[in-house]
Amino acid sequence: MHPEDRVLVGVINTKRDLKFALEQHWYRIPLGQAPKGIMAEYLAFFLSGSAPPKDQPSGIYYFAEQRGVELATRRALVGNMKPHPRDEHVYHKIQLGATQARVPPITNPTNHRFAFIYTTWDRFQHAQQIKDLYSNADYLVDRIFHILKQEGYKPRRSWDVVYPTIGAQLRIIADSGEVIAGTQLPDNPDDSFVYLNPADYLQGTEANINRIKDVVRRFGGPKMVDLPVELY
Image 1 (cartoon, rainbow, N blue to C red):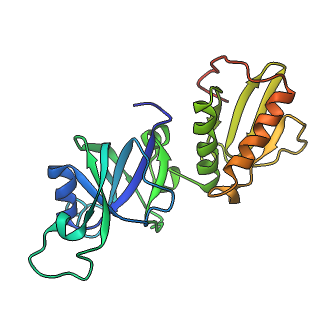
Image 2 (cartoon, rainbow, N blue to C red; image 1 turned 180 degrees about the vertical axis):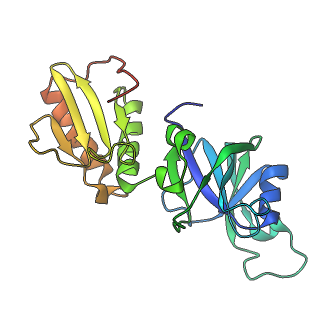
């Protein structure tokens, strides 16, 4: 497990679907209903309805490593004897590794409504409530982080929820200084700062990355050194 590993949180609201995850090691998502994609190293499961343990609140009680994805109809997955209106609907069948308990569970005291949550392993590991897992600003920065890392940069992140006064940020050490890309404008930004609009969390990633790269180039290009784990 690595801090930057991606975690996709889905909902299970029946004991039947919980049994599929715990005993048969798979989870289903209707095709097209996960708007940000299903690419994640781990899946976590928010139990609601009849799925949580007896007398316990809704929350994230389990997680598992993703082992693969295939497409299947609801009929093939569930195998109901009686006809169902969605029998021929297509689902992602996500194969899981051994399901592990999340202790303590991540609860939802504010009853925040969601279908899926995209977060990272480090945040999943430290979260106490659902609100600790994500924000649009964090998602935007996380997308940019992974692309820059794949291209050989060594960025570091800070999270909007963890550091609300500065927002989500990326830091890149360049040859002649530090470049910061963030979702909150500082009082007196200089030419080493790149503003990232949280409203661009689903679009504009390429344009934001090109702006960051332009600033890094102006500062002499990336210095390929490992930054300290803690930002602040």
